[in-house]
Amino acid sequence: MGPEQTLEPQIQGVWALQSAVSAVILGLIAGVAFTLLDPGGPWVGVVVFAVVAVLGVAFSVLRYRIWAYHVRTDSLYLRRGVLTRVSTVAPYVRIQHVDTRRGPLERAFGLATTVVYTAGSRGADVSIPGLTPQRADDLQARLKQLAIAAEGDDAV
View 1 (cartoon, rainbow, N blue to C red):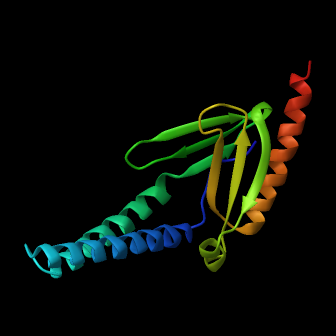
View 2: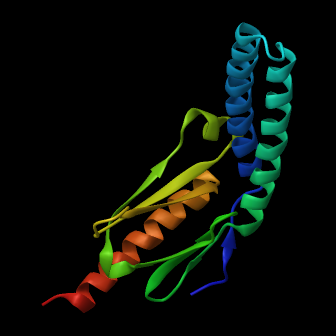
View 3: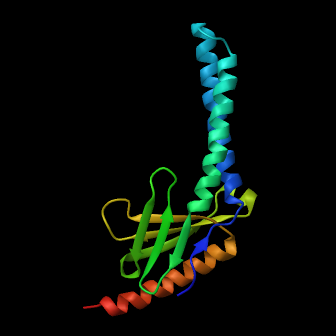
């Protein structure tokens, strides 16, 4: 029903900023711990921050390059994961509802996330981050129409 879609490049900034916040927290914890325990001093916190920040930015770039989704004729296909590759197929007949979400960080970067809730037991929802609000709304409407059409095919 269309080509494979990728995320907006701005999502790399969101992910990198989230990693930077984690790096600051870990750096502070390491700096305080190593100062109190006196095996190395507060400079250890700076090293921990730098390592975690660099790894976080690299991970954000790799994550962006791998992330893709495809609206097929009978299902939504997602491909993601840096260390562990994950491929998810969500048949339209299993879709219960679709949300569009925009957190404060996403709004700052002009992005939104589409969340697809499916019937199932384990992790029965999939999120597609890094979309413009227009793309997220369009995807939400499209998936809703496809789910309604698929339900008619599966009706008893």
